[in-house]
Image (cartoon, rainbow, N blue to C red):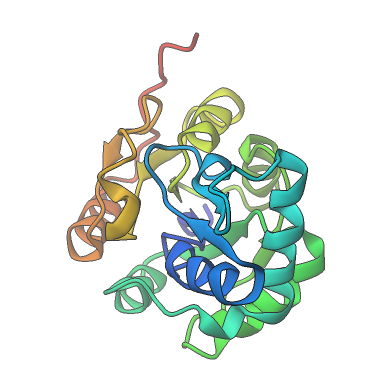
Length: 213
């Protein structure tokens, strides 16, 4: 039997992203970020006229941020201490939707903070990469952590035995995001979240399978 596995997102789980991103797009692109609901793209508006950016304009801004501005990011409170505690009991893999182009930079970013974990720069739903990790590693129990409800649904479909924790570690947006229906718990504070994760690892049993729609 192999070690337990914790698969975690990065942005708004381990590292602040929207706050430094908002400062950068304001300074460099004349774009305001005002998140009024769960829509990231809809929060981006031109400073001069207030019109929302087109969907096709959003990814180039995100790509530019990850390409040149990742040093603006800083850890979510308690995240690195929690990873150290969890790493004593489980393997950790960071599964982040920055894409393959920014995978190495993300790994270096986290390693500089003391988290020397494998990083997978994915795109799209996270269910399939989680399933592949389970097939490769055969963990005794697995926990998935992410801030986006869609990824919890994707993992519930592809890897229903995985425990799923919904975390939005950025206080500026946490209150605007409803709990993910396909997560087993919603916890936005790392002290409480680490206890929940360690309890799941200690129990060492598969997650209850969801009612999928």
